[in-house]
Image 1: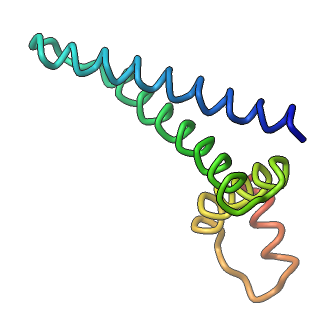
Image 2: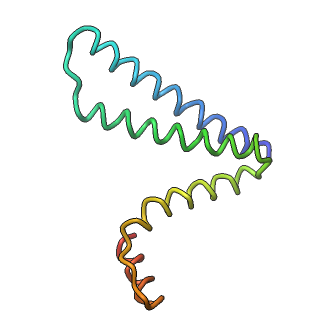
Length: 105
């Protein structure tokens, strides 16, 4: 899948470029004594998470020889597990457990 492989690399490069620009602006503001807007800080954190996610996908393709589509699905599922499973109340009944998970999602 060379086209999809190129796509994930382009997404990674774009995310890293956006992150670099936003972090550079924030550093410039700090060096000039300007205050940092909290919304800008939140945006930089979100950009860093996005760039890191794309980097993980590219690392899986390069290092583990995983198909690009499979790598993207694995990273997405891992992120969902980390975010969602910590907040799902645990039930002994699997049906109640699934209802609790669906309510959160």
